[in-house]
Length: 485
Image (cartoon, rainbow, N blue to C red; front, top):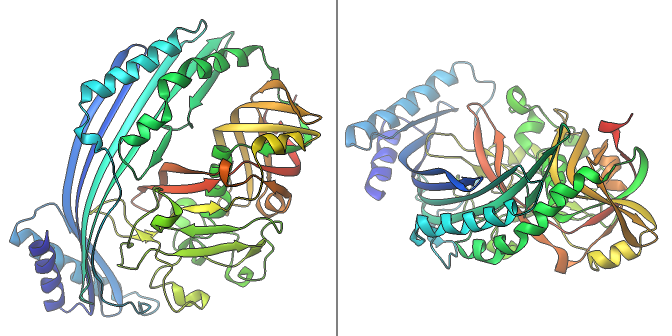
């Protein structure tokens, strides 16, 4: 890796780049799935290549290659410079980077059990045991289980003299039980929807989930939903479970604070943001108990947004986003930091692979815990609906108006859980919603969830992000809109 990266760097600077950085990546993935008692997919892939990013004549250029010969590396570096010079012909302003120090470092993420050391047969055996437990429940139509492992090895070098090696292992697993009856589909997922739980850890994450032990309970809930009452419509207090709050954070806090969206350079794919620059330090985003951070540091936990350095060589940081309800921070890059008066990037530039240019991405965007258990929160609630496990979401291109649906809900009456509710949905406006938050559970309920499938950019990049959340209560929220009669 070192010789390839240094050659690309030398070629780029020799061709006239005023700044250059090179990322060499070797990415290995194994994906396994089962479906109704049979192995459905067993797939393994490996991708290795190099990406060169430069500034020449005040403009950006990027090129990449998987031809890792000397000639291939030279051509890619020269192409990056040529693209920068062509871009300079129509630039609106000079590309200027916030200063960074030279870094020479090596970081390996914690991984107790290498998932690639676990035989495929052992993984499939475990998933088929889960499958058998699910299908043992009468009324189950479809049982699905999956595991996803990634090993990402990266070397970053830059014309600043930085040389940073990082190695991380990511693990994900989960299952879904689906029941089809009377033209209605109900499903329950564990421990979360859309692939389960994902973290920057090893196979120990799978072992800790107890997939087999939870399978029958989750399947029984899927079947029971058919007989459950429809979620009522109207204005109600609600409690969001930890995983659902994680997605709420992702969509209504994480995406709006990406500064490239605010500045309009993301508008073509996923829209912009209501969090325009004048709102920094001036907008009451939420109630006084709402505190949110964007934290890529190891101390925050093994999230999919955890690393030692971003793809510009900027060290991982904890950036305050919402402090006591006040909006105080964005996710920035070395180029955009100055737009909001920052002397340094917040370290949020990441790329999906070697053939994609780094863009501003969420790290671990989390709401900090409050006090008390979920049981205590329920006991203090007179009349509300509890929402758990996302099923659907919709939010406008400025991340302001939203509607979410979850797999199931519970009605809470007089501090106790009552009837199960099916097809629960709720809707709101981002700032009104977060300002209605009047209770957040404590650290004992806080989970750092992984979102492995966040799409952004053109060409699109799919990136993993993390979201720490405890269950929380929100007052006077519109519920049941999607199924209102």
